[in-house]
Amino acid sequence: MGSVESGSETKADISDSTKELLGSGGFVAARSNGKAQITKKGFEFLLEEINAQIWTLLIEYLKLAEEVSYNRPPFLTSTDHEPAAPNG
Image (tube, rainbow, N blue to C red):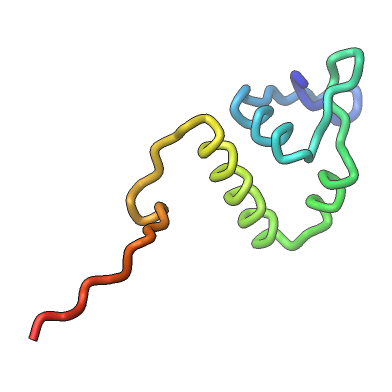
């Protein structure tokens, strides 16, 4: 998965992290020749509303970050303990 070609003239480079996100999310798969191929899930993703696309990418990013042991900020970390009772 290297770059995207639209027609024969335009070519856009894609960052390694974006390739990793799209691959781990199942949106693209590598062909035997090394080029990327969109999957059924990737095509369905493109047909979604933009807000659904953003949420889907955010969820996939968080899954990937968890896999590579990214330390999430405290507000994204679930806790098993109950909130403290108010004083008074």
